Amino acid sequence: MSAVFYHSAYADGKFIRLCAHRHETVSSAHECRSSAEEYVVAVEHGILRAMTRAEEHEWTQGTVQEKTRQSHDAIGLISA
Image (cartoon, rainbow, N blue to C red; front, side):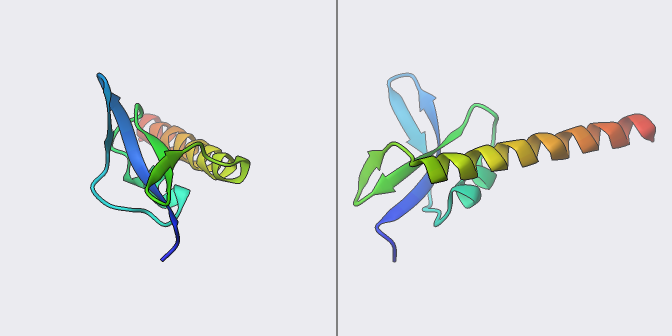
């Protein structure tokens, strides 16, 4: 098992709330989010850390793909 894993997370007052399970990829954690306010955090050797440029890029790609899907869904609803 890798020393790095990811969680979907959100801020709740003074606390950071994490999803209940570890994700091996940024994309997997991104898909686990239940709201737009949630984000992804990296954990390495049990410590939260900033994401690398590569991880940030993976996050950005997931966000762009999500917005594209939402746009296509909305267009489908308008056309129907």
